[in-house]
Image (tube, rainbow, N blue to C red; front, top):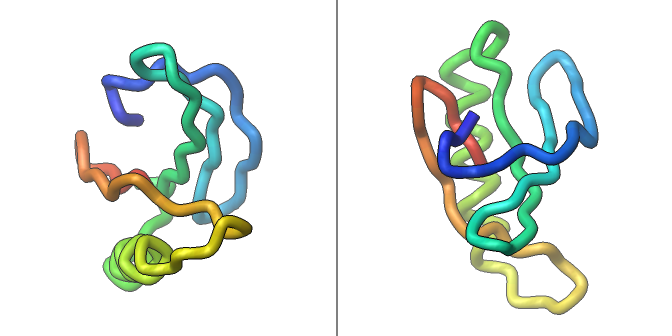
Length: 77
């Protein structure tokens, strides 16, 4: 998990991803993380594409990702 975030709770867990509510610098964030044990190169690429596509959507009804980070061998959106 991204070291710089304080995890508050796990919101969802599946075979491929975990979703967390987290805090950093007093702000709230939602993090989506690939499960490192079960992730393939295809799934890693898919998460990166999800970030690229979602970051281009400019609609107030769509949550826009802030960043895509790779840390400690994990990919976090």
